[in-house]
Amino acid sequence: MKTFDIKRYFIRLFFCWLGFVTPTVAQEDLQSEINRIEPLNWWVGMKNPHVQLMVYEKNIGETLPQINDARVELRKVNRVSNPNYLFLDLIIKPNAKAGHFLIQFFKAGKAVFTYNYELKQRKKNAAQRKSFDNSDVIYLITPDRFADGDPANDNSPLTLEKANRADKDGRHGGDIQGVIDHLDYIKDMGFTTIWNMPLTENNQQKFTYHGYAISDFYKIDPRYGTNEQFRELSDKAHQKGLKLIMDVVLNHCGDAHWWMKDLPSQDWINFGGEFSATNHKREIHQDIHASEFDAQHHTDGWFVPSMPDLNQRNEMMANYLIQNTLWWIEYANLDGLRIDTYPYSDKKFLAAWSKSILNEYPNLNMVGEEWSLKPSIVSYWQKNKQNYDGYVSYLPSLMDFPLQNAIVEALNEDDKIYNKGLAKLYQTLAEDFLYAKPDNLVVFLDNHDMSRFNTQINENPALLKMGLAYLLTTRGIPQVYYGTEIGMTNPKSDTHGEIRGDFAGGWSGDTKNVFTETNLTKLEKEYKDFLQKLLQWRKTATAVHSGKLVQFAPDNGIYAYCRYDKKQKFLVLFNKNKTNVDIKLDKYQEVLGQAKALKDVLTNETFQKSLTLPSVGFRIVEVLE
Figure 1 (cartoon, one colour):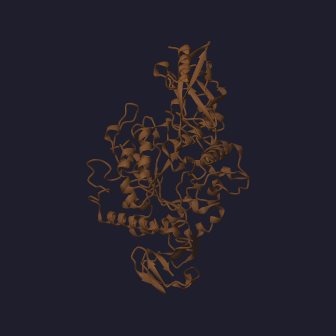
Figure 2 (spheres, rainbow, N blue to C red; figure 1 turned 180 degrees about the vertical axis):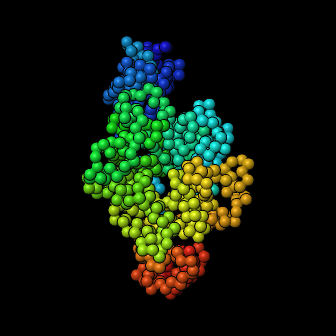
Figure 3 (cartoon, rainbow, N blue to C red; figure 1 turned 90 degrees about the vertical axis):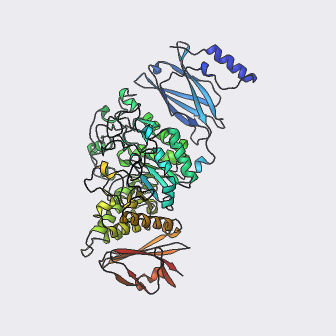
């Protein structure tokens, strides 16, 4: 092993001080033989000056690290049971300047390893970035199934699974370039924010396209592109006025993760690194009668053998995950986060993680996945919720699974049966008192883990439009799954591979193309035009973004609510009856006030004392005063 020439290094520093050479250390002076240091870099000017570096190299634990740089203090060296790891606690000094500094690893008085670590300059106003909010509509994409913008990266010598579009569970070739190529389509449709399923490396033998079995937390999967290309996506989206959300996985990694072959310590992975299935009892966090056995086997249990469960009670693991999230936000200039399987992680860690993120980015919106149909369970995790056990969460938003379920039941059930049908919508919103901020919940008709909405409503065109109208006018932040704009379905099965079908036109040679509208059926074109018109209208509907909501209890298959602010007022009405219904407006006088007329925002029809609701249909009318 070639050692570092200390004498030569300090001579160079002396000449740097004299001004004869630049302070950058010459490449020949560095033998960067360290296998891996993470985070890959850091930034000056972060509110928290601490950063912990994980160093991985054979027998690195037998060395003595040193940093001789006025900008950085090596506060502590943490050694673990595995001698191939070191964890270095650094403090970035106030007013430190961006640039490189040298980390030397000494053994027997000689520097046997060196690493030139970089501190970058933050973007202007990085800490105060504006995040996604009620004015936005999120477009959820399964990247492997959206568009293949670069067929050359469909297969990579660095990854095991190869492309096979004939396999519904295999890699199909969609990538970051495919999303970049269609940013105009996304914008023109009326979406404002993009959420991709995870793009980080999943180097498993098979079933890797979903992205949730991460094998490298700091690397974009080469079949999707590169880290630089992900940043390009962010930059180009911002240039078009679009925002970018990253899907974050805190609970687990993939069993092909690089550290699984050489764990830092026995407690790095839950249950000692041996598979033990989670019991999925998410209620244990709220259950005052919960046993410790059930609690442990929920939080520490693994989803499947290929997804080892991370032990976030290990302080260095917790630091690693917090810093990884911060790194991606800063590196890719992200506008928000979606957090996978939120309640499966250690709850104390989740509080520390969410608090740390908001400490650096106080305006950042983050939405967690808690797949429960009870608002009492979901609301527990929202920031500012006063919980019975004193638990304090800093997570601003949750996915509104209770309302998603209510929408499907409301449209499918018979309204003539007591408490069925549209009553489900009324009853679910009536429980909004349980949330600290119900308006900040993310609402949706379907997502990547459930049957397509069009399948759930038995491919009824009228119900599809009613569902979209409700989604885009109720409280909360709407999310639409790619393909909903043409009514995509999964008629053969509810397997994920079918649900996450290919987006027509995303591959060269596709006979149907959504982007160009080539060979779309009449109904698909109708759906697309309908949603686009609704989305474009919503952009200026401030009352729908953040206005108050007053709902009227369903009666005889009719349900209505009003959205209003100081500038606008909209009355939204739904009719589940199979005949047109004439509605007298007296019932809604308390919200209509001195209205002169009502104008349908989609058809431009005007009404005064009454209006007609189409059979199995809706109206969104603006109140003109």
